[in-house]
Image (cartoon, rainbow, N blue to C red; front, side, top):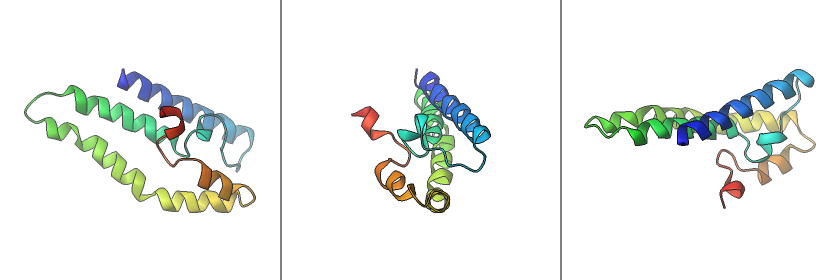
Length: 111
């Protein structure tokens, strides 16, 4: 179930972003699933990789957490740089979007 929801969120966000970027090249995507979190596709990927880690109950189970941990590390390491670039692109409304929208986890949807 975690794999299915994670894949759905990731794919839906990527398709929405692709459609929005092709409709308005150079525009920043702040609507659709990206109104819930700035990097909602990362959240979907994290859910998908979490399913692999949770389902493995074998002795090398800690190795199953490696893809999740590595992906999270790479995503979070680039977060500030990506947000700074986004703030430059949408200078007029970027500050509001960056300060009011969660970075990765859509907390408002979960609670």
